[in-house]
Every structure is written in structure tokens, then in C-alpha cells.
Image (cartoon, rainbow, N blue to C red; front, side, top):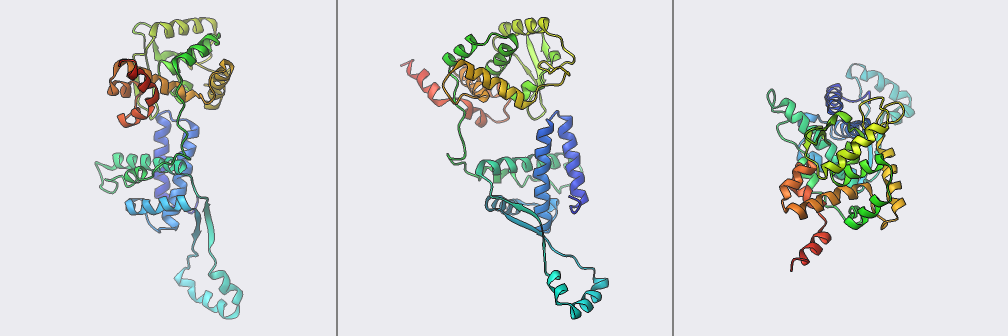
Length: 337
């Protein structure tokens, strides 16, 4: 870390500060930091280059490095003003000559899986996009994002990706029927009808809910502010009000611990999995299955992909398409024939 270029580290610190300002979780920021440190180490000590010189070819080589693994060495740097001293010592010590040719390993990368490489390169893509936006009015150094095309070039294999299992309406009804606590019902409704991610549920606040308009305005993944006209608003706000009446709140977070801090992502995941397991539905259902069900059901209802895209707050409709379960859609289509 101390060996790295200070300008690169300053860029990283500014970027991570921006992520914090956008309400990114500490866990996410730590991951970004680790990914960037690894890339800085590679580009400085393996490529002997700077961030501003990064291009698609370099990113291609970095992708191969992540895929194949291997060490990154730090070469010894000699001061020419005292080179004669080393020459003098070499004459009298063969051991010193051996030390002169040694290299110290700064990092050893184990081969990454396809999905891990995509996640890692996605971190770099977002970082270079940030550099592009903050420098577009003052410099052309980061006018192009060198990572963007390289991510899509990584083909995902079936063994690396386990598709999210679809939660059917019948399965949700069983889960709902076996859930009695208002807090748990509210969680399920926000996931199933609102399509919220668990990370968004963690930081949801009481003040995000507009009781008059029956809408929710909150921070989505990526930091954007989203106003959601949620489905089943009467059901959700009815449970919300009952939940607020029966509980004492230290802070503004909707789901908080005794100290008033929001539940962690791990805590939320475990709670939802307990609810699913208690209902004894088909194995393989996960918290993300609720978001997939929301997308699929909403598309069947509206037949409007762009509406579903905006509802889930996706930046690209191609991502939304992956959330729509083809098997469920096919069954629904057959009923009309």
C-alpha cells in the first residue's frame, strides 16, 4: 500500500468518499478498495504504467492475470549515484550479487472464477466511469472507459452461475399464510410487491414513506433517489402503520436493532431465509426470488418491459429481461390459446 503511486491513491480516496456520500455500505466500500488496490499494484509493478495510460489492451491482459493467477513482483531499484558501491561490494561478495537479482513478491493472485472476474472488473468499470465524469470538463485523460467492453467479453458458464429460482404466487401465499408477525409481513411485502433488494431494505427509513400519497421515496442501489408508486399500497401502508404503533424507534431506520442501527445485510438474509424455511416451500427459494417474482408478475400484468425496468430501477432493460421467468411466462401464454 505504501509503495503505490500517491496520485492513484488520492483518486481512489476521492472515489470511495463519493461512494460513502451516495450511502454505499461499508462492506461495499471495502470491496471496492481491495479491488482497486489490487489493480493499482498490477498496473504499477507489472505493467509499469499509470492509470491515465490504461487502455483496452491492458485491461485484456489484466483479465488474463485474474483468470490464470500468478505473482506480482517488485523489482529492486538502484540509485545511480551510489552504483559504484554495489559494484565494489559485488567484487568481494558473491552473496550480495545473488541478493541483487532477487525480487520481492508484492501479491499472489489465485485464479478467479468467471463470476468473480466479472464482479472485479465491474468495480474497475465504475471507478473509471467516475474518473471520466469528474475529468470531462478539465482533461481528456479519462475520456474513454477502458473496462466497459471487456466485461461483456467474459462469457458466463452454467457451472459458474446458479439462476435465481422463481417464487410462484402459490408459494408466496403459503409463506404469507405462515407469517404472523407484522414486521416480517412488512418485509415480505416490500420484497414481493416493491421488488426491493435486501441492501435497500436495510437502510429504508420511516421518513421515506409518504402516508398521504402512498408512495415511497428512497435511495436505490447505486445512490439514485427513486420514488416508487408501489403495488398493493393499501396493504403495505396498513401493515406499516400497525408496525409503527406497536414498536418504539430510537432512530429513523424502519428496521433497527436496540441501539437504533439498521440491521445488517447478513441479519436480513438470515431472517428471510428462516421465514422461507418455516413455510416449507420448494428448496432453492432465496430472498432474491421475491424480486424475480415481482418483475415476472408485473410484466405479465402490464406487458411493458420499460415500466418494469423503471419499477425495479434498472439502468438497462436487458438486465430486466433476465429477471422475467420464461417458464412462468410460457405457462401464462399457453392459457390464452
